[in-house]
Amino acid sequence: MNREGNLYTFIFAIVMVVIVAFSLAFAATSLKPKQEENTKKEKMQNILKTIGVEVERDAAEGEYKQYIKEELSLVADGSVDEQSDAFNIDLNKELKLPVDEQHFPLYIADVEGEKYYIVPLRGAGLWDAIWGYVSLKEDLNTIEGVTFDHASETPGLGAEITQSWFQAQFEGKKVFNEEHELVGVKVSKGSGAKGDNEVDAISGATITGNGVTAMIKERLSHYLPYFKKQKTQLALN
Image (cartoon, rainbow, N blue to C red; front, side, top):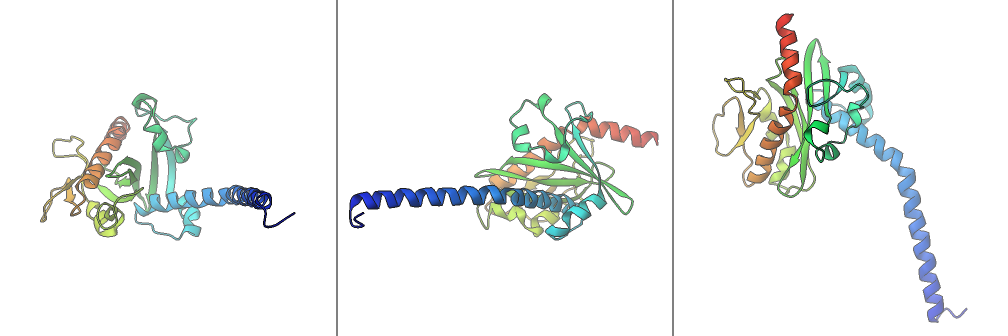
């Protein structure tokens, strides 16, 4: 075949496309289990981080089993759906369902005798989704720690929600006010001392900060029936 002809060029291009497509498909298929394993361990790292346990990815599963004692899949009335796998609930998909059809994952940790309740979060930032976890102490009011992440917030602005200086502000804050109403934690403009339910905003990232405020209150609101049952049980003990 004439290598200078159009037919040769056309056949060569087709063969190369097929080879590249096959190679990419093979790579994607063969790497998928490893990607899923890394995603699982990263999730465990983030859950553990809210209770002050920071580990390398390879050690995440062992530490997770040590500290996380229960994984619950709650429904709207605060009861537990025993048939649902809490760890594998996809909040992105759940948020598209009516509230009374959603499941609300909850992780319960024990760290040296202290009990913590860890709630997954998901909301909207400036450009795309934001998400994270918040852990509450046994009083179901005081925040032990948080982690936040995002899909595409602006570097140096909204993306700062992933930084430790921002997340550390939430430690010790309350999610209920003095009237025992759920208010979450508001990301507020302005410097200086903040109340029990506020932290300082990130300069130039108002919409992302509002997104953090909204997702904490919105997600926690669905756990109120369960929290009420737990507080009643604590009062009886």
